[in-house]
Length: 490
Image (cartoon, rainbow, N blue to C red; front, side, top):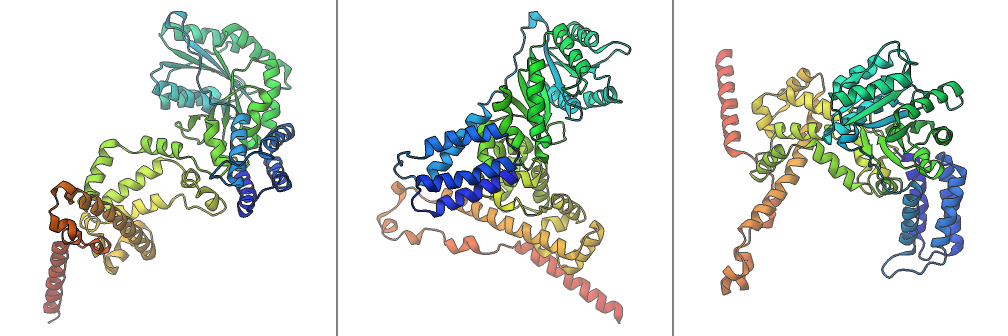
């Protein structure tokens, strides 16, 4: 996401960094490029005009901070103004007291914006936070919308309320009463998708709002529709008192214009963003993190959160112990690959790393590489997984044949594993070496004068380790088989 706008703005900042001194003319020329990048990314014209005027007012004539280059200062100004334009983080929902009945969340949106799926994702997110959620299927316009919500409700573990032959306003009112009787904390109303120019359907959603008096009214918009999403959101807000916006399909939007414009134009906060089709693909919106992504600075906080959600704590401790004992094998490597795959798209993960995402934005990324590596490892025997450095060509051919792969891909896997093991081995050796070093109080005068006498040899950190016992056993078996083969020929 944001590949286009991030690359264009990154090029402008790169030109700034190459200049020793920035004048008002240089800054204005650079901001013209930023203006072009924002407009081509489908950011609203009024938003671009106001954004650049505020950036120029702060950047031109600003006193230079000690230790900071002029280019860095301009980047900081753009960063701060991007956050101000997208609004502060505001993903909280107003929850009703238990005595006042369930919290009602009304979901509205255009046709095809992903509203029904978003209802299920939101239900899952609230359920993870300890809420008891009920979904109400009130979309009577789209064929199979009710069945879709029931299937999604089963996936996230939330009941779905629906009664045939009842109009949407009455259906939503009955759904809220059913949620109250079932002691549900939250009820989410999935209404039909509608165009903002359809007076009948807009009148229906207004009637639903009047009947149910929701605590939160969220508009679901498709990020890939760009400026149309902004215009429709503005029109919806004129007919319906919105409390927030949910932006879907953000992972498929390379331009990013909608999310930059929405808060400024609609005047309501972006509450959540949809980043994948999976049920866990709904996240709270953090403007500061997305501003950093747009400027190519990465998003370490989101990367850490993804890692924490994908990696089991006990398994991580187990892997750490095996690394320190130099017992890290292909089975452990496969577990690590599975954990990385759980974190989502590889290209998106690279985009979260500062200085990396922009470089890989235009390069093709093989998203299936981890799955293929997993199949190759599954094709190995337990002995081969424990002794990958002893897998010779004949074994590679057999492994490749069993995995439906090639010997070169098996070789690439082994090479990547060896590189990873070496890197982890060095970390283990350094930690082990640090633990064995005596403290300064324990050193004798002779040791203080000659520290090399007791310090481990650092060159050992860069020598390739081999399991000597396994190697001897393997060579003995090979020699025994060769003798038996020779005897059979006779």
